[in-house]
Amino acid sequence: MAGRPYRVNEYRIDWGRISEEDFNRVVEALLVREFTDENHVARAIDGKGGDGGIDVGVWDRGSGGIERIFQLKYFPEGFTGEFRKSRLPQVQESFASAWRNHWPSEWTLVMPKNPHKNELNEVLKLAGGKPVSTDCWGVAQLDGLLAKHRDIEAAVLRNELVELLKQIREESAALVGPSDLSERAQGLQSVAEDRSLYWSTDFIVTSDGYEESYRPKHPDAMKHEPIKTHFTMSFGAEDGAIAQMVQKVLDYGAFEAVDLPHGVGKVSRTGPEWIAPYTNNDQEKFSLGTPINVPLDSEIVTLDVRDEWQFSKGRFEGKILGRTSGLRGNSIQVGFGSCLTAVISLDRLGDGKPQGQMQFDLDLDGKLIDAAVYGIDMMEALQPQAKLEFYINGQKIALLQINNDRDPWQTDSYLRGVLDDLDVVQKASGLKFVLPATLTHWERGMLRASKLLLEGYSTWLPVDGIFNVELSGGGENSANLARDLSSEGRPFMAIFPRFPFEFQNSRVDLGSVRVASDRVIASNSDDLQIALAEEHLEGFNVRVKSIAPARWRAQPENVKRDAQGNPIFVSWNLPELDEPALTIDGHQER
Image (cartoon, rainbow, N blue to C red; front, side):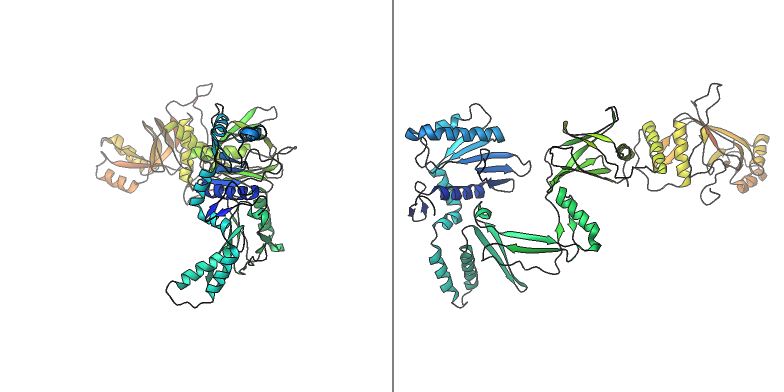
């Protein structure tokens, strides 16, 4: 080992005589091992070029924030007495740099000796009222960590040549006892461990072959003895679409992995001479993806659409579902309501205007009308050349402009009409509906009629509408009405105090509505004629329907009127339904 020699007592490291290089290596390995768990990751930082006040840092895996910083100082004599003048400023500057750059919750100085009380007091004073806990570690804490992680201690103290010869001699023996195979395998594992000061080797042997994998013993293993795994891709002319998808993953990351066709990807491995080659299986398939970070706290994205005078003409807010990144920039996945998901990918900010991509996925199937309207309104606002103010949690990230290289969004007129009609019905009734997958012609016509009636206009009703009329009395008036309804027909008008519209298993009250037609007949005319002949008309239920060219007209009680006082009549204006000679469901259609 480089530097000053250290003394090895049996199973003990003499911290006071260990070299600076080995002190840093062992302490970094201990701290990284001790403080890495399912919620945190500890890393040793190379200080060349400035380490920002970190030798070993502990990060929260969820938030990505740094929680604890360890600063290693190779001060075998401490920093009091004759060393105070030169070394105390180093300690103070290290803390100041860590606080200035990272704001940790805890900061700990680590030395190869137990701190003098004056040294401990100097470290405790560093906090100076700041919300940070400071401490100084020495031999006691380091020996405690070694006791927990004896494999690290053993790696430092082991006489590798003696261990290797011992294992080779044992391998010449036959497998006899029930534990021989287990002991021999463990012995081989020990030999494999000793091949490198920096890497542990795991291996597995099956009937299909042998495979090795490697774990770093030291945080700087890749620096001193690099092992590199190479993944190469080769695309043919038929793989153009896949190649574009892969490029996007490489540039900005992806929230769904891209499956590569067989033969496109290949893995190879390089490193020290003892590294085993990668046994690439020709039948193996690869997927290309990037790590996704799901935020623990709510992060709100706001897209504020501006006009040419910088006035807001659309504001849409969503919640960040995940973050990922690539070589070129970062991506966030944002849920806007329940039906629109956006992936916003931006280059890492440089000197020029932000560049990137925006991808939207609109899924209206089975969604509530409010959510569907919100999603479509957003898509209609994000047209080519639209300018957007992009915010996260109220902080402006960038001013974006959508390029002309995408087709403008055009909402289907039928879909927009259904959404607008149901929006009016919802607001008037207080009910909530989902976007229907399909509508019959009768349902579509009745939906538009309901919307117009609720808005105060007179309009048509679907021609297949049938109303029940109960005859009162059995006199001549009822007889004449029965004769007309069972033969040539007659004009008809009735007032419904609560006119119903049944939709998605709900019954909507459209209020008081007057229904009329210039010519109606009884759809149950045969039964009506029998009742007329037998003079059993009183209480008879006549099913009345309008016959062409006459149509049902409906007028709300509080109908809107023109300047002359006439009720305002509004047709459906539905291109998919003919007016006024429409017949429904298997009859004449346009």
